[in-house]
Amino acid sequence: MSTVSDHYPKVLLVYHMLVSEDNPRTQHLVAWFKDWPGDCLAQICTGETQGQRPFAKQVYRLGAKDRWFGALMRYHRARVLREAGSVNALAGQNGGTLRLRAARWILRSGLWELAFPIRLSSALKSFVSQFKPDVLYVQGYLLGLSQLALRLREWRLTPICFHTADDWPAYLYADSLARQLLRPVVKRISTRLVRQAESRIAFTRLMKQEYEARYSAPFHDVIGPVAAMDAGAAAEPIPSCPVDCASVVYAGSLQRGRWRSAVHMARAARALRKQGLDVAFVCYSLDAPRDAVVEMRQLGTILNAPVPIGQIPGILRGAGILFLPESFDQDASSWISLSLSSKVPFYIAARRPILIYGPPFAGIVRHAQTEGWGRSVIQPSVDELTECLRQMVADPSDCVHHDVLLSQYDVRGARTRMLENLRALECRTRATRNPMPTPNAS
Image (cartoon, rainbow, N blue to C red; front, side):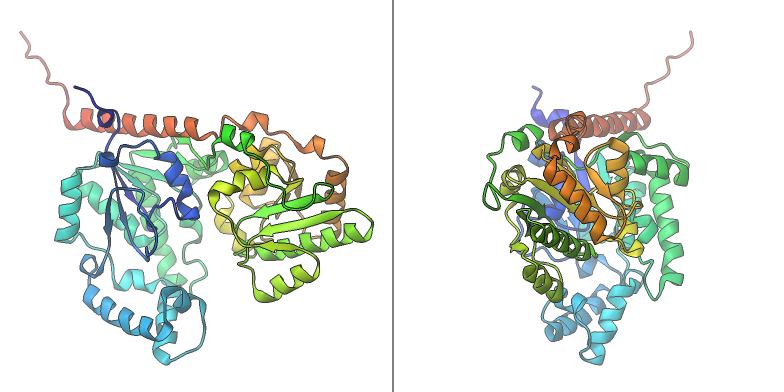
């Protein structure tokens, strides 16, 4: 008797972060694989995963036994963490003892990937053999995981589906002090991963065009960030300020220089209030530098803590205008020049006017201009931002062009296409492994 699992290939996610419904940074993976039966989905991950519930029922966390010289790495890591207090503190702080400074330099430089490479340990082989994957779903991001995927492909003859959310092959370790050593390795491994993948999916059409030219290899589909469009449109609006106030709302991270653009919006909103317009900038984020937070509050910005993902559709629906900031620093934005923020589908589903503030080379700006949604201010100018905001407050109706995009970013369509891609890959691989016998000539 046929079961639900028979219709789904067994997919092994090779991804650096633990995929979890509790982690906003892995929501796109949760959305794409939400319908997968539990016995058909597993993950190999690395890094800190405390306090998060795994999305896949079967998870293998890479440890010291899975790295060459892993015992040495574990010994020094434990000593360093005792001094630093946590991994986040180690990565973020400066100064400290000589050991701390050396560990921080190795961590930021990426040399640890070369010093302690991932290997196929007996425990890892046992995990993979018991799961028996039909497809390896790989995004890359780390040299070790990219090499691991290639080794698993060679060992198990399991095909790779390559699908990355941003252009890590172009930026990984580009600002490292050891970049002269690491960048050629990144280029070699990423090129091999892309070209040897049996299936390639792009995150945006811009990425598809760029990658096909860069790697001389076809990309078979485009599957980007998604949201439940009907749920977003039907969400009960949650106002962020009084009804008679024009609210400008942003919900998301202010890291990687976005906080500077948020400060510009705070100044623009303040300028319009001085001119008699009742405008409020409401920001659901607290991860900006302390000085920026102080200035934004002094300018009258309403700063709230991030909200659970389930509340975001209602908050976006309750906004007057939605704000999408990007950094104008080229180094900070280059890593997303081909990708698209996971916030975009939620913004589009809310059917509210959208104001994008970022450089012309940022992926979100290029996408908005290509697809014709929202208003873009592409110069770092508070005056230009203020004028655009004034026009949108006066007449927001001409900014709403979202209907043509709803099907492109609807979660149900994306899940169907993901399943079709991976099932086709599984079928092609089985046909290659088990060709039909040739009839004997009579």
